[in-house]
Image 1: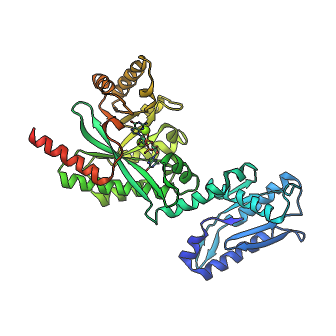
Image 2 (image 1 turned 30 degrees about the horizontal axis):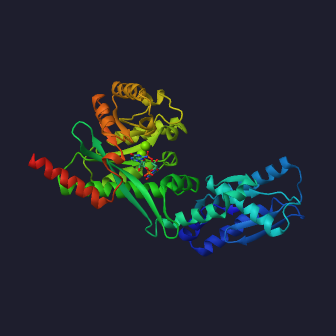
Image 3 (image 1 turned 45 degrees about the vertical axis):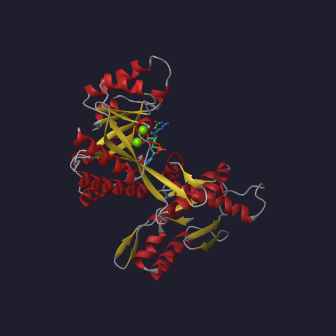
Length: 395
Ligand code: C2E
Ligand code: MG
Ligand code: MG
């Protein structure tokens, strides 16, 4: 049994208050046990319980629920009401676990899994947790520290306007330089961050860095139309404070109106459509652009295109890899459909100039691919914008 976010209690109320609260919690748990059961504090905010009084799986589950509920009940402290939750791991003794240590280790893996799913949760141990392994555990704890240690950075990939081949904007992409493992790609660490609840922190880092850069670029180049697009994970849409966070970032950075955009994938929106509509409408009303990312991968539900306030469609790069001549049939209809719904289109991953030309003839507005520029440092992005400015003046 591990209390969720207990550090906040210690930080906010002080250690002695933290101790008092731990005692309260311990008393609540012990009240649920019988004489043959054992409760111990294993360390910090972690308790271990050996339950001998129940053997029926259903009754064990009910007991765990009771523990969870007992912890969740509000605690009155210094005229304040504090609500804490816990993550519980359940493991039953089998002859496979040779020692007590093995049993505790498995229980801890289950607790860890419960935390990864957001806490306030009971997770029965499964052998698969072992292969999720210490490697992953290590990486997750490294990721928690990566922000403070400045190991995370943002690179910017140009989004080019096909009609005149100028840079219209950039997508901000997170990078993690691990001190021992070297660079770890976002497809690996973003899911990790989503699983252990630090995606909010990473997302905020990406948004505030990107907004600050955009503001700087707009001021130093005088280009007030260049836009910035930042990826948003599904977990971030579920956070209630996202709207306020975005509002603060906009207020602090003072980017030109309508030049800050957020990107979401279909699956992110579909995880909780009602909540997503609610949040996205609010974000849209602040003048922030919304792009539907990776369109065409996974289960595309066209209904979502009209139901959500998107203004830009990003067609996934898999369509461009397609060698068959029919690929333009699909691209053409997607582009037309987007236009009829009032959306502009970015095609990702264009590999040849011929394809770019074809897409331009289909009135696709933008392209983003290695062909037109790889993700680059902020300095190089600014240089690119400056060069473009000078070229425009000369022309
Ligand atoms: P995405 O949002 O679809 O970003 C585009 C990805 O395609 C980037 O990969 C980019 O480097 C890559 N790409 C661009 N042009 C080409 C091309 O011509 N060919 C090929 N093969 N690939 C190209 P990257 O940077 O590895 O990012 C992967 C994914 O990680 C992103 O996909 C996005 O879903 C996620 N991601 C990156 N940064 C963030 C972030 O700050 N927050 C969240 N939630 N997700 C992020
Ligand atoms: Mg994206
Ligand atoms: Mg994409």
